[in-house]
Length: 469
Ligand code: FAD
Image (cartoon, rainbow, N blue to C red; front, side, top):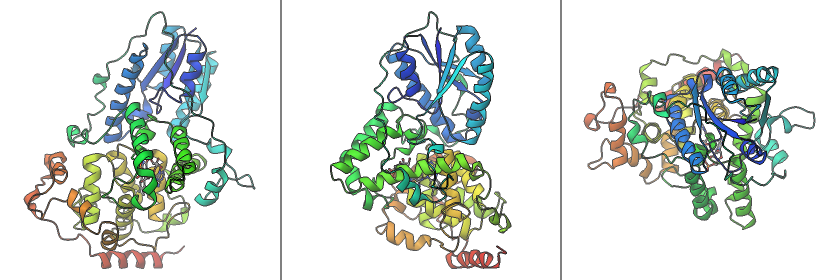
């Protein structure tokens, strides 16, 4: 009987354990993508980008003579209906590790097994299953460096070869049309503009990795902190949709290290930050929803997301050029440089004393590389409420940071049009992308700071010192 392979954040043919195993079984294989309860909840940019990825993956499957069946509805209903229609005896998939997916998958697995279906999950979205990394006391890791030490010399199996053939079923099931799902419907920011900056699909991801290993990784250690440079891999986008597997990235990084490329170890460590984020999210699902350190519940966070200061932050109009450049970069490209993410998160949670959940939600709506674990950890780390976090009293000064990491203002000029006689296209793209209702124009003049940098810093430190924890 056929095997249904339920495709989720694993839009690739190479290093895909479930597809490889199904291909090797000699049985007919029906790959399926469901617009289910988890996909429903995605923010605007990630949902739009996911749709592009699904389209590219459907083409890749067509290229090997297979099809991607699309269905909408809850995962269990969708899979049960397909099992009925196709007579499939098995439903296989690759595991996800965020709480919403895990809850869904547990229920689906139990129900399908009860129906007598061979429901099976495979590893693949991570290098190390979160429950296989333990301290000597049998606990999970709360601090990154010991986590890195625990995994850095582990054997990572070689990546699986690309699946080149899948046996077709006698009849392909009916499929929805991807366009009818309108996964970009919430992109009121001009998807055509953001579309210029994304690179979709498995081949593009492998191209990025190849180019980064050839040209970028050697200098990664220095270049990665300069937002105007093309100094990082930009693989977070394909990694989050599984257009490339972390194992493929890991082995490429290891080879670069063996070849003596100086930045390779630093890059491998970043891949392990992604692992660490999932390790923590798996063991403490509250990382996504509340202060990881509960004592922070007593902190006077401002939770009003309609305040003028917060709106100015989301719109890149705080009057602090580094912060505004970064927020505009994200709005236009769906990405933001890591150094900039740290600065805008520090500014929102410290200078503006705003609850990190508000920033996290905005990122979730804007980032094409949105990842449930890395985003949650990044925000709690920046706010000081998370595990292994930067202490609250370490407040980035965005002006000093700009002088240090953007000394020639290349990054600021790329994204902030105001005050430039002939702004570059990137900076103008921002005004083309924002909804008309925001009423923004490059001729408006640059805003005065919504809060003085010293005053904001003092306000945050005073609140921190008055805390009763
Ligand atoms: P590279 O520097 O080339 O690193 C290689 C890979 O390592 C990345 O693709 C990513 O998978 C992983 N990585 C690097 N830095 C981190 C990190 N700090 N935490 C976890 N994994 C990391 N990353 C996301 O993928 N999605 C998010 O939604 C996200 N939100 C963030 C929010 C905040 C407030 C902060 C401070 C960081 C966030 N990050 C997030 C982490 C980091 O900024 C991005 O992973 C990185 O900028 C991606 O660029 P790159 O692919 O060029 O990374």
